[in-house]
Amino acid sequence: MKRIIHTPAAPKAVGPYSQAVEAGGVLYISGQLPVDPTTNMVPETIEAQTRQCLANIRAILTEAGYSTDHVVKSTVLLADMGDFAAMNGVYAEFYTHDMPARVCYEVARLPMGVKVEIETIAVK
Image (tube, rainbow, N blue to C red; front, top):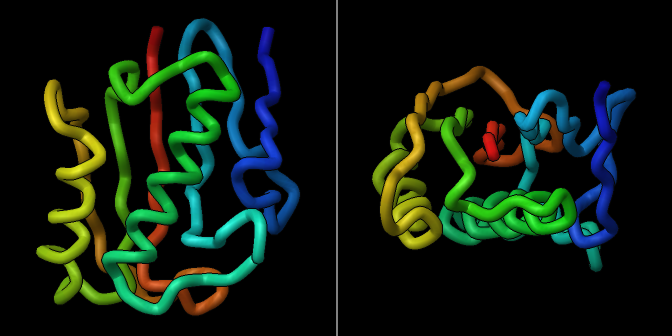
């Protein structure tokens, strides 16, 4: 049995997918772009974009009844690996203890020309 998660506190999906799906006590959050759900704007800097991605993830976690303590894995996609240190600094503000496993890749392009996208898995 699966449960589809949707919150207006995170951007709407830009394609045929859900913001998140919960199945068997596991929450799979689709890659979150740095889009402010109230303005549909994307901040300019990698730091602001990372904060917005993580704020969107937090909103989805909250809607589903999870917290950052439940996050077990993140996948970070960067348009430029040169932004790794700046992204990592912001990421460390969001996860302050019991860090989830993580992988980070540089990719050729991201939707809407953004600098970062973050996917998350949480378990209760």
